Image (cartoon, rainbow, N blue to C red):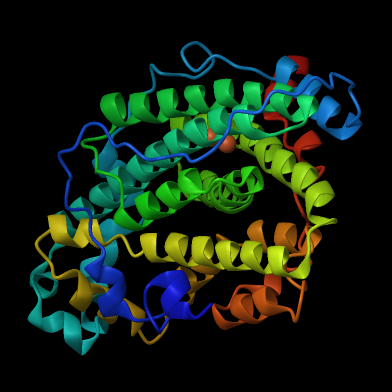
Length: 375
Ligand SMILES: [Fe+2]
Ligand SMILES: [Fe+2]
């Protein structure tokens, strides 16, 4: 398949094509997607997959309560937070803004506007996390129905509960501590639609557990590192403990299944993984934040990209793939066939993570809930 067929554009970095995808029905309350799958019963109740069994046991003992296990009485001062994250200091460096920015309203932004930018970014980021969590809730409920193995049905049912809790805590954080929601980003929605739409049970896992949750695990980890806000830190710490299990669920299940797929079937999976990677990268352009602040997203994003030295942003974008790439390698997706996915990941500059730790067993050491209980 060509890039046109996989991505709907010839050039993976075509900014016009990326920004042309916007969310037009922002007022819709219910969004229906055909899930094209049979619900599968199995009469084989034999517990023949011990690794999934261990994961299931872990999930049962590491449940937590989003209402009572987080310090919701913490005061969150979003403005102060944006200052702590460095937004108040940006005007001092305004002369470093590239030429393209100088014709936009951004050129006149003072401290107040940059702080508002920081606040909007935070509202946007947490909103997208919340929408992604709902995607995980729906996808995992689908896996309960479609996966043919009883051990996987058992485990997936615990993940459904985990994801409900994640949607719940992100929604509560947005409603009670931040200052506004954003509708789902169009690239993220397109990806979630594609995942739910696919009739093959393993594609739900690949899209959700490996790609979306692999990225979420990395993104939550980065946000946990940088945020000084104690409630969000604790929330992310617990959510990440669960996410590590979810990604492990994907790796353990697909490892077995992919070993017996044909080259053509593997190529389908490689293309799906690449499409997901690009959609997630596109989403992080945060086009809606610029729109809301009255700045043309194209000019803003062009200008940000041409910043002479923005290694930090680049590094951030690349680090989002630090879990996905080693997991794809473990599943044989990088090098299947002629190494098609390795070439694509090289092209979007994320291949350097291939030998980082994969998430097959990492959940044991990331179980912060168990650590707090034994402390
Ligand atoms: Fe989640
Ligand atoms: Fe998850």
